[in-house]
Image (cartoon, rainbow, N blue to C red; front, side, top):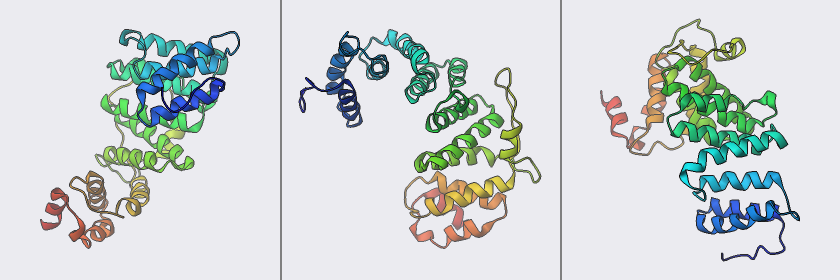
Amino acid sequence: MSGRDSEGSTLSDDLELMLALLSKGKTSDAKVLSDSILERSRSSSERNHDIEARVRIERALIGAVPEEMIGSELRWCVDRLNAISSGSSVHGLALLNLATWHANRGELMMALATHSEISINNGHPLDINSLSRLEVGRILSSMNDYGPAMRHLWSARSGFIELGMSPEAIATSLEWLDLALDDIRDGSPTMASRIEEAKPRHGPGNTTFPSNPSDITSIVEYLFPILTQDLSGKSRLDIGLIIEASEKLNRYVWKDAIASRKDEIQDPNLLEVFQS
């Protein structure tokens, strides 16, 4: 591996280097370095169970273990971290990856069960919890369980905003808005009240509930100044959702503001809306 000789460096230093290599797409170099980190983390002189579990998570994700062993490897990491650092960020990361592995295999109930182990009450940090709520919302939405899906997406969005994770907050807001626009009713409970009154269920179902116009308004007012900075792009489903909200809520100030900049729009579907 080029770039650095790990001899004499600490395990944590080399773990950071391995993660940096992965972030740059240098998977082969990261895989070579992970062999050394794994061996050293198990040695009597440098034994470190946290780092062993962390590197084994990454090795499972980059194909350093046989495909048929990925699930059992991720489960080992979850169990080990649950024993030595339950509620930690890396424990939550292990649970997220195991849940994603189940979801990718179509094992949605197992994925939901794994996500249920992630909780602020269990000590997991807000970013991990919010990412988990986002994935739960997506899974439930794929199962047509729209009411609880909206509740989880709203919770995820709140966490992302609190943490300043703007890209994630924007994406989650749009996913929530896409569901919310299907059924809007004055006087329906707000998301805040639905979250406060939520109770455990035996399992997913085909449930829906109407959205409150005030929640939609708050979402659009959050998104509007961000998304309308640039109206270009051949596919702007995000702007389409704002226009739909504007029409359904009879708040044409949003649609009119976009229409005034029609010459900046490149999406043919949006242009058709303003020509009709």
